[in-house]
Length: 296
Figure 1: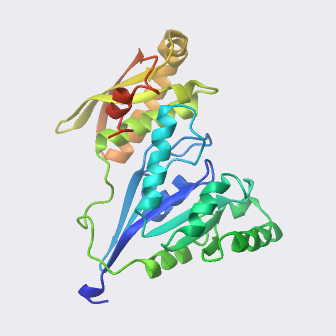
Figure 2: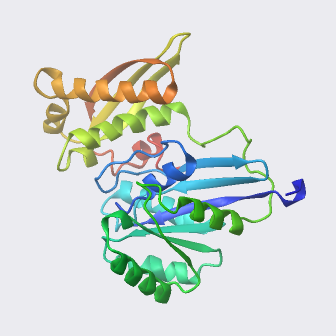
């Protein structure tokens, strides 16, 4: 492909919680950029992952799972989704073999009216039957007749090559949006905070992960290591006690797991300090949400 046929565009991944959007983006990008857990609302931000070739650039965006907002944080999360629908060159709509097909039907109505190409991925076919997958494909074809539909398993990397080829085929002719050596729009501080938040999601249950936010207070790069200080914000004193655990054991476990993952991601030694503070109103406070990167 000659230089004037270079293709580039924004491929925005949307769908309901827990259908595998983050797993799919990580697989397509080839890097773990989005944290992944079995809990809903793991992804809170819009995260870009950029894949470059000699004659193409694909800018993927992972987005929060679609939900009806109950507080200001969730409204900000849904604003990320709305923006992603509005500025997409291609929509990658992810569903799976488990969820109710008509969940959040208003977004299906939006996709029917959208002008850009829609690629629909039915994920998690590895935990389904061929008959169920065939029925789902037929149902989705009636709902979104303009969409190109792919059964897939992001976890098992099944059918990802065909999805990639379809994306490449629908990319508009355009110059690269980012330098070709860039692979994400987020900085290392962001990934440090997300790695800590992932460990909170994995180690605590019930409401605790949803009441927590992580802020990086210090991020210094030395010759041999990163020195990182982070604050875990919770909403109540009782939650602070749970996060810390008896004798600090729970917080130490989170810190150890996060440090190991950071060292793997940054390819450098990490010295990590964690603190816990109470901020009762952070999920509703516009200034706090702006500080955490949810509002602009």
